[in-house]
Image 1 (cartoon, protein in one colour):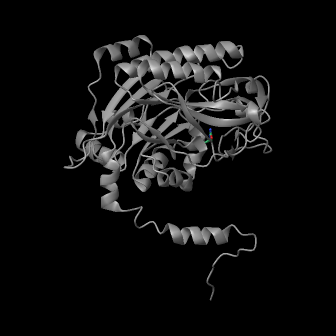
Image 2 (image 1 turned 30 degrees about the vertical axis):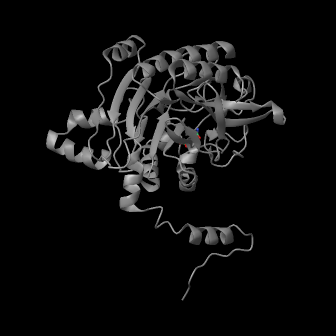
Image 3 (image 1 turned 30 degrees about the horizontal axis):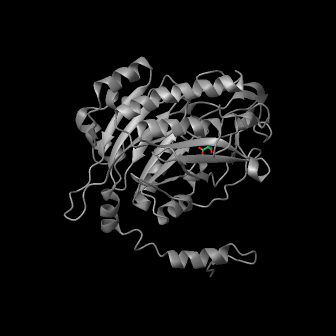
Length: 392
Ligand SMILES: NC(=O)NCCC(=O)O
């Protein structure tokens, strides 16, 4: 299983395929080729000084007579943890705040209107350990915790909507922890929050000891730049989860994630892209980068062998978080991924008119037969349900 030494699928294709083949492969794997954004030179200089990758692409829509283009620039941030997981909690959080501030400043130079960080961005992805301390100390109030206050300043200073996925401590309700994304308006006000609906119980990704399945449904946030939703990590394997955000009107669905190569790298390019196609919306898949080492060994709690994560013994790391963040559009086009090995900012210029234009061609909402599925699902969840199987 490749680690940081294998830079990206795109680099590999470009290195090895003759141009005519490369064009056809890109057409199939990425849809129509996107124009590269002409981002400011100072942005590239700052990104290089701060040692992160910067890429930008534009998705175009057809011109319409009655509607003006609805242009929005989104920014996707992927990063390593800058300090080791055993550094003091407050130092780790401050180092991450500093890192993200530097990246957001470059996003502002690129005209980004909505930015989203990776899942649980203020901490190492410690849920695999199933230890409580010190990891639960990273949990904060979604409404007025230090990270939300930090993001409010960023949002206001840069006139940018900030999507900040954190580990939430809800002190108003018995100190319950949640895996939450806080959505902060470009005014600096907290617009609201949404919680991870589906909790993984896959090998080391057994996060069920920390928080419960989200109880806020599928909220969509009306921002000045468009309607957005957040489908946190493992929720991307659940087509109905994407569907509900889309039914509630989301035009852009962010998918802040933390996932590793051995488990999900072959699913990664498909799932968010498929969701964009199936739901006539844009999707933004974000994954963290690097290998995180934890002070104490842990196991997957499933005996000796974990076939997915390839860890036969107790171990101190999860495996390799492969970055590769990308944006996908309703017409099946997508950006190349950011690198597998570096921190990065991906800027994408979207014309939200594309959602309706593709909807009018493919009509997935019109042909969706939701009533029939609602009826059948309502039956299927009953304890006395028996599947309709026609036998000879
Ligand atoms: N963070 C998280 O839910 N990871 C689960 C693994 C995956 O969905 O790829």
